[in-house]
Length: 499
Image 1 (cartoon, rainbow, N blue to C red):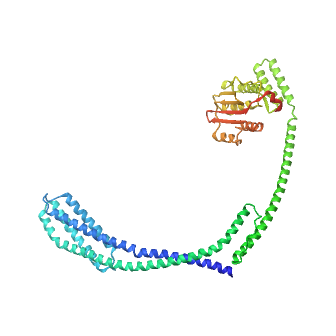
Image 2 (tube, rainbow, N blue to C red):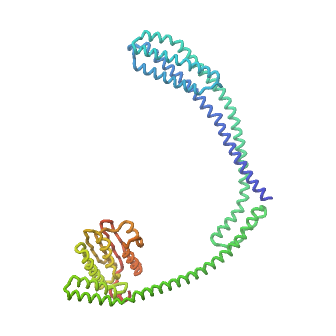
Image 3 (cartoon, helix red, strand yellow):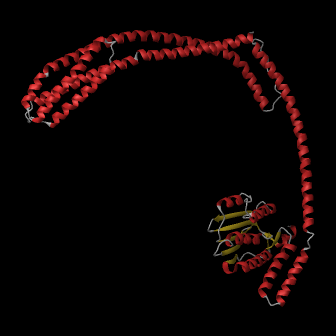
């Protein structure tokens, strides 16, 4: 029951505070309605009447000046100004009529009288202006004198309406001032009541928040996996907080036991995953060995000897070009058979690349050209490079750069050294890589649906496996060509046995 009473007390105080604040806001709106709103309405009506009187006086002044003017019977400027004043008087009078109601009887009858007199006055003035424009100044003067009675009535009624409006506005202002005073007093009372209830609510919350701070500190320690903290002391003065603290202490002990159990379980799972990983690796190696055994069932020496036999037949039949191509293919094939190391002598790589290009040149003819630029300080017989690296880069340039290009192009292979680094570069002026393919190759992926970039991806993977310091960079612009550069530490020939 105590818990329910505390909940109800907090809810009741909050509801009262909200009601008092809402009442205060409502009183402020009422005050604005009974003060600012009516005052703006009265001032608007007052300015409308004053505007009408000023426009009427200005119109009469210009009519009189026009009647007694000596510039001739017709003055276009005077005629335009008087007509503008008539329009201005009509607009002010329409504004006054739209604002007045029968609840203001004095002003209502004055305005109705002005509204009926103004059309007659307007006709007099327009007739006067028409006669003046026609040169009939005598008849115009006659009309001028006939309108004087109407002018006097309009002036009297408008002055009376202004005085009545001022007197009525004073009465309304006194009434609004009295209402505003009462509304202000109610605002002060509701504001004081809101402050008192807010202070009581803040004191009650402080008595609840202070014990909760100890729970927050204990929770932060548990969040840092510190379960050795002492139990939060129980305060028996508040039954709700006492039960909360007891439940928290019980949760702390349960969580500690659960975390210890999870740690032990995770350790067991980690050992199990490591065992499964080793089993999978063993299975992969077994499958790889099986694949190699299947591949080795074909005797590579038979293929090599068959190529030599075909070369001798071509030599006997006096087909030198065929003999040269078969010899080039045999040397490329022999290099792949007997040089299975990760690194090969640079001289051998240059030769096998030249032999490969001779085979391709037999296919494409003079459409493709290969040029070598080897720095003087590079000793091909003493340096080691990744096996088939240059051949694959040249093959990629021929297959994807120059081959699809109708006019062919040039390939340039550059080899130089800078300090302890060796640079191998293959550049072509072929078609270049499309932007999306270049992005995929640079990220180490293989483009889907095409074999473009597969050789480069393989070289990138081999270079990283050989030495993490190895780098392969690709620069390409579609339609203008590509430039592939390998940067690697220098390996001398005496290191061959270590690779």
